[in-house]
Figure 1 (cartoon, rainbow, N blue to C red):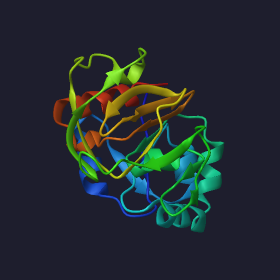
Figure 2 (figure 1 turned 120 degrees about the vertical axis):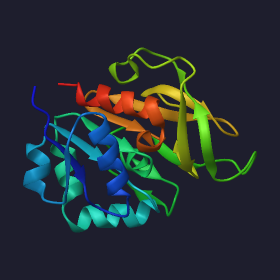
Figure 3 (figure 1 turned 90 degrees about the horizontal axis):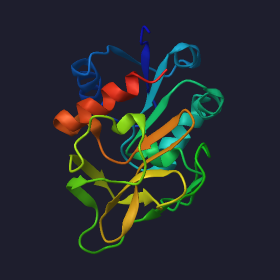
Figure 4 (figure 1 turned 180 degrees about the vertical axis):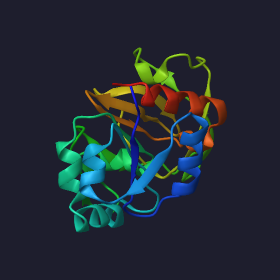
Length: 197
């Protein structure tokens, strides 16, 4: 299968580092806010940094909230992009995309806030995105909010409590960590994502 991957350009994100990580995973990507380009992609990545309310305003301003709701190809939300996949974020009392059920809450203040650094995953189910990953693989996190450990959580992590580090339902996937900053484990996860049909 020929992969045509598009990174959704809405809100603040380091598109350069994500594009380079995808390139290292063997896939060239484009960055676009054009609905037709996003719809025609075989794989869609939704990154995000900053605040949920600002990111949702940017998506709505381009009509991309409606576009994302109609996609059937594999979608991968990264960090804030993962949080936007859920119904609601406590950050700014923000209504999100609702592609995954559940709410995003502020992480506890202890042991420190925000959660910044390397952490491992606790996989509760096998999933193609986790294929060939070491059981104790480390991933890089930078976030102050996270989705609760819910029914769609494939893997969790701990920081003052358990939260969903990787969630998936049908074609929609979200990772709270940054695969583009997670060395070999992140590269493998991106390769696994691009292998999804």
